[in-house]
Length: 569
Ligand SMILES: *[C@@H]1O[C@H](CO)[C@@H](O)[C@H](O)[C@H]1NC(C)=O
Ligand SMILES: *[C@@H]1O[C@H](CO)[C@@H](O)[C@H](O)[C@H]1NC(C)=O
Ligand SMILES: [Zn+2]
Image (cartoon, rainbow, N blue to C red):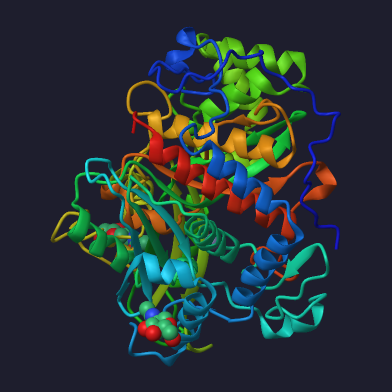
């Protein structure tokens, strides 16, 4: 396969940014260019790369280790061994204890214990809901807010029919001299093992934290996270409090890649909301030889056509994260067409330019999906027999809710949308537990809208990326830059621009909102160059390059050291 993570920044990628002056982390007024446009007029430059001062020698020692073949073999072995313990989870599994399929995590725990002896002898470990792992690396200074590093132990199942399509078997952890192959090698065992490898290495080199480091590993992220992160979140609120006790949280998420000729790292600082709407129509049954004009199936079809004819209104808000990202692309995209650059700039203060910009950007479906509330009819069911009128028919419409909207607004929108059809068909209409049609009116049947599985989720609170409260974002940005630079033997962090990202999906952090205001979903890995995509996540031939894994380890070491001595978070 063509998958490859570039370990060297192509020299053709020009450094787009202004030369920045020496870093002054102590100075609190650090401005970042890629922030919310409200602050645009204030911004002059991006945050510089950030490396620890107090523990500079330690980082340098570990940096040396990372370059050794011995350490590389160790890092490969750690990840490869983790891949060899299959930890597949499936949708809708009964609770832990009621389904033997959860038991795959016991051998995985044994593997971690055997592989990271210093972590196990130094950190305290609490098992939450049997398989959730919660470690605490207690710092010497209790006045410092702890940080939380998160990852998930589970992997998406490998479809047995595809076993033969894998270049190397999915649970082989095979190392070909460049890549570690197998399910979970990237998502998310590279992150989980990256954290463990970093901590093990730091302990081995004598580091003792001042700031407490908490590590949480869920075990059903790929199946909603309720059993794992759901329980871990509750346990952490119990232990550390509900008023954002952590300075920041880093969980899996966006990485880095090149866009418009510049490398951008995009830690996700927001997440869309979620709602599955169950749309159900009932009407009298009977023999189909004497049918009414419309059966429940016919009516349901009309309702779905109505949905599709009325997509949610799309609007690019200047306050949104996708807009901040676009601003950042405009500012730093070295090869972005001049016209687009200008349009992006103007859109900050001209509504006309903003509408024009929307036209351009909304041609890209993934971008549209990031901005707006989406809808997709994903399930339909009705009828049992060719000669019987269907008494019931239902569909499921899946929504991913815009960060500018809410669950309530989405429910209200759908309720309104179907109102006229409910009336036309004389259906007694109930939406999300509320009677909508007037009582006593003659009814041919019913229309009911409901939260299908009770799994609705508000859009996540947006982590601050500029101004007061954004210190953790700045620390993360600086860490990304210095890691990226160090791994490529560059002088500075100028090879990469950090921009706020978001994704259309959700991670375990949905259960961690009360734990920190600064939640980042970020894996320090990515691809540079168009033909250089990391692939295989959630499908065949998932693989992780050994060099990329070393960079993940360096990222966590640097992050922990930077956080340990930061006075601003
Ligand atoms: C880790 O392994 C050691 C040695 O087998 C054992 O004594 C210890 O109880 C294990 N710890 C955990 C948390 O399982
Ligand atoms: C709805 O009810 C009205 C009044 O009872 C009736 O005239 C009409 O035919 C009904 N329409 C349907 C589709 O059942
Ligand atoms: Zn994942």
